Amino acid sequence: MFSIVSILAVAATVVATAMTTPIETPPAPQAAAPEVQLRFAESDPKPGLIRFEDATGRVLYLWPETVLSTIDIASATARTDPVSATPVVELTLTADGRDRLARATTNNVGRILAVLVDEALITAPVIREPILGGRVQISGQMTMAQATDLALLLRAAPASYGRSLADAVLRRFD
Image (cartoon, rainbow, N blue to C red; front, top):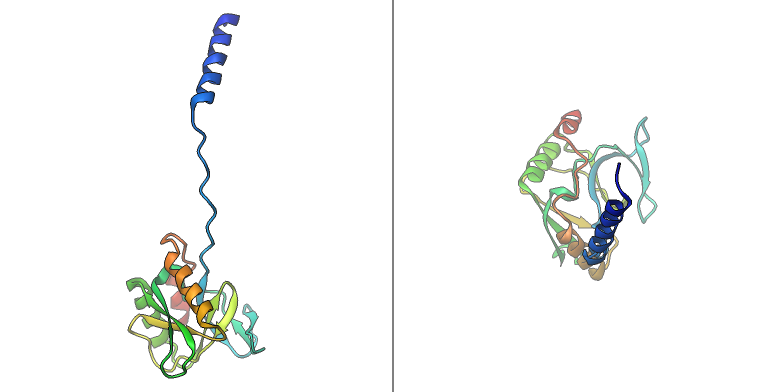
Protein backbone atom coordinates (compact mmCIF):
# COMPACT_ATOMS: atom_id res chain seq x y z
CA MET A 1 0.00 0.00 0.00
CA PHE A 2 1.24 3.47 -0.81
CA SER A 3 1.59 6.07 1.86
CA ILE A 4 -0.07 9.42 1.45
CA VAL A 5 3.38 11.05 1.35
CA SER A 6 4.55 8.95 -1.61
CA ILE A 7 1.32 9.65 -3.49
CA LEU A 8 1.70 13.39 -2.88
CA ALA A 9 5.34 13.23 -4.01
CA VAL A 10 4.37 11.55 -7.27
CA ALA A 11 1.56 14.07 -7.82
CA ALA A 12 3.95 16.98 -7.20
CA THR A 13 6.43 15.52 -9.71
CA VAL A 14 3.71 15.14 -12.33
CA VAL A 15 2.52 18.73 -11.81
CA ALA A 16 6.08 20.10 -11.94
CA THR A 17 6.83 18.17 -15.12
CA ALA A 18 3.62 19.34 -16.75
CA MET A 19 4.40 22.95 -15.86
CA THR A 20 7.92 22.83 -17.32
CA THR A 21 7.23 20.75 -20.43
CA PRO A 22 6.61 23.00 -23.42
CA ILE A 23 3.33 22.48 -25.19
CA GLU A 24 3.82 21.88 -28.89
CA THR A 25 2.05 24.34 -31.11
CA PRO A 26 0.11 22.56 -33.81
CA PRO A 27 1.27 23.39 -37.32
CA ALA A 28 -0.60 26.12 -39.13
CA PRO A 29 -3.26 24.75 -41.43
CA GLN A 30 -2.22 24.69 -45.05
CA ALA A 31 -4.39 24.82 -48.09
CA ALA A 32 -5.21 21.32 -49.18
CA ALA A 33 -3.64 20.38 -52.46
CA PRO A 34 -6.21 19.96 -55.19
CA GLU A 35 -6.98 16.42 -56.19
CA VAL A 36 -6.39 15.91 -59.88
CA GLN A 37 -7.83 12.78 -61.44
CA LEU A 38 -7.84 11.41 -64.96
CA ARG A 39 -10.66 8.92 -65.50
CA PHE A 40 -12.13 7.19 -68.51
CA ALA A 41 -15.58 8.46 -69.45
CA GLU A 42 -18.51 7.50 -71.63
CA SER A 43 -21.08 9.64 -73.45
CA ASP A 44 -23.94 7.36 -72.44
CA PRO A 45 -24.93 6.10 -68.99
CA LYS A 46 -24.01 2.57 -67.99
CA PRO A 47 -24.33 0.71 -64.70
CA GLY A 48 -21.61 1.70 -62.24
CA LEU A 49 -20.70 4.97 -63.96
CA ILE A 50 -20.84 8.33 -62.19
CA ARG A 51 -22.63 11.27 -63.83
CA PHE A 52 -20.59 14.49 -64.15
CA GLU A 53 -21.40 17.79 -65.82
CA ASP A 54 -18.82 20.35 -66.94
CA ALA A 55 -19.13 24.15 -66.86
CA THR A 56 -20.73 24.19 -70.32
CA GLY A 57 -23.44 21.70 -69.36
CA ARG A 58 -21.88 18.72 -71.15
CA VAL A 59 -22.77 15.51 -69.31
CA LEU A 60 -20.39 12.56 -69.16
CA TYR A 61 -20.46 9.30 -67.27
CA LEU A 62 -17.17 8.50 -65.57
CA TRP A 63 -15.71 5.21 -64.50
CA PRO A 64 -14.99 5.27 -60.75
CA GLU A 65 -11.40 4.07 -61.21
CA THR A 66 -8.70 6.71 -61.54
CA VAL A 67 -6.08 6.40 -64.28
CA LEU A 68 -3.82 9.08 -62.77
CA SER A 69 -4.04 11.31 -59.71
CA THR A 70 -2.16 14.06 -57.93
CA ILE A 71 0.56 11.70 -56.69
CA ASP A 72 1.56 11.04 -60.30
CA ILE A 73 2.45 14.69 -60.94
CA ALA A 74 6.15 15.57 -60.78
CA SER A 75 5.73 19.24 -61.73
CA ALA A 76 3.09 21.72 -62.83
CA THR A 77 3.50 24.94 -64.81
CA ALA A 78 0.95 27.53 -65.88
CA ARG A 79 1.39 28.96 -69.35
CA THR A 80 -0.50 30.16 -72.39
CA ASP A 81 -1.07 27.52 -75.02
CA PRO A 82 0.55 28.78 -78.25
CA VAL A 83 -2.17 27.28 -80.46
CA SER A 84 -5.35 28.26 -78.60
CA ALA A 85 -3.92 31.31 -76.75
CA THR A 86 -5.73 30.12 -73.62
CA PRO A 87 -4.32 29.45 -70.15
CA VAL A 88 -3.29 25.86 -69.47
CA VAL A 89 -1.54 23.97 -66.71
CA GLU A 90 1.15 21.69 -68.08
CA LEU A 91 1.85 18.64 -65.95
CA THR A 92 5.00 16.58 -66.08
CA LEU A 93 4.34 13.13 -64.71
CA THR A 94 6.45 10.89 -62.53
CA ALA A 95 8.05 7.89 -64.23
CA ASP A 96 5.31 5.65 -62.83
CA GLY A 97 2.59 8.05 -63.97
CA ARG A 98 4.16 8.37 -67.42
CA ASP A 99 4.26 4.60 -67.86
CA ARG A 100 0.69 4.13 -66.64
CA LEU A 101 -0.67 6.90 -68.88
CA ALA A 102 1.24 5.51 -71.87
CA ARG A 103 -0.26 2.06 -71.29
CA ALA A 104 -3.77 3.43 -70.69
CA THR A 105 -3.80 5.67 -73.76
CA THR A 106 -2.18 3.06 -76.01
CA ASN A 107 -4.92 0.59 -75.15
CA ASN A 108 -7.78 3.09 -75.30
CA VAL A 109 -7.39 5.27 -78.41
CA GLY A 110 -10.80 6.70 -79.29
CA ARG A 111 -12.08 6.77 -75.71
CA ILE A 112 -12.76 9.84 -73.60
CA LEU A 113 -10.30 10.67 -70.81
CA ALA A 114 -11.85 13.13 -68.37
CA VAL A 115 -9.74 15.51 -66.27
CA LEU A 116 -11.19 16.43 -62.89
CA VAL A 117 -9.84 18.90 -60.34
CA ASP A 118 -11.41 18.57 -56.91
CA GLU A 119 -14.29 16.55 -58.40
CA ALA A 120 -15.06 19.28 -60.98
CA LEU A 121 -14.99 18.16 -64.60
CA ILE A 122 -12.48 20.47 -66.32
CA THR A 123 -12.04 18.90 -69.73
CA ALA A 124 -12.67 15.57 -71.42
CA PRO A 125 -10.73 15.05 -74.64
CA VAL A 126 -10.93 11.99 -76.83
CA ILE A 127 -7.65 10.05 -76.89
CA ARG A 128 -6.43 10.47 -80.48
CA GLU A 129 -3.10 8.73 -80.02
CA PRO A 130 -1.03 7.24 -77.21
CA ILE A 131 0.42 9.80 -74.79
CA LEU A 132 3.95 8.54 -74.32
CA GLY A 133 6.03 11.54 -73.24
CA GLY A 134 4.75 11.97 -69.70
CA ARG A 135 3.32 15.46 -70.27
CA VAL A 136 -0.33 16.42 -69.99
CA GLN A 137 -2.15 19.73 -70.30
CA ILE A 138 -5.16 20.75 -68.25
CA SER A 139 -7.17 23.27 -70.20
CA GLY A 140 -10.67 24.55 -69.82
CA GLN A 141 -12.57 27.55 -68.62
CA MET A 142 -9.88 29.17 -66.46
CA THR A 143 -8.07 32.47 -66.29
CA MET A 144 -4.29 32.75 -66.19
CA ALA A 145 -4.54 33.59 -62.48
CA GLN A 146 -6.53 30.40 -61.86
CA ALA A 147 -4.06 28.35 -63.92
CA THR A 148 -1.16 29.84 -61.94
CA ASP A 149 -2.88 29.12 -58.62
CA LEU A 150 -3.61 25.54 -59.65
CA ALA A 151 -0.01 24.98 -60.77
CA LEU A 152 1.33 26.41 -57.50
CA LEU A 153 -0.96 24.20 -55.42
CA LEU A 154 -0.01 21.13 -57.43
CA ARG A 155 3.70 21.86 -57.00
CA ALA A 156 3.14 22.13 -53.25
CA ALA A 157 1.24 18.84 -53.04
CA PRO A 158 3.03 16.46 -50.70
CA ALA A 159 4.44 13.30 -52.21
CA SER A 160 2.35 11.24 -49.82
CA TYR A 161 -0.93 12.77 -51.02
CA GLY A 162 -2.15 9.36 -52.05
CA ARG A 163 -3.03 7.58 -55.25
CA SER A 164 -6.35 5.94 -55.81
CA LEU A 165 -5.17 3.66 -58.61
CA ALA A 166 -3.44 0.36 -58.32
CA ASP A 167 -1.90 -1.08 -61.46
CA ALA A 168 -4.45 -3.89 -61.31
CA VAL A 169 -7.27 -1.41 -61.95
CA LEU A 170 -5.74 -0.42 -65.28
CA ARG A 171 -5.86 -4.00 -66.46
CA ARG A 172 -9.62 -3.54 -66.64
CA PHE A 173 -9.09 -1.15 -69.56
CA ASP A 174 -6.32 -3.11 -71.31
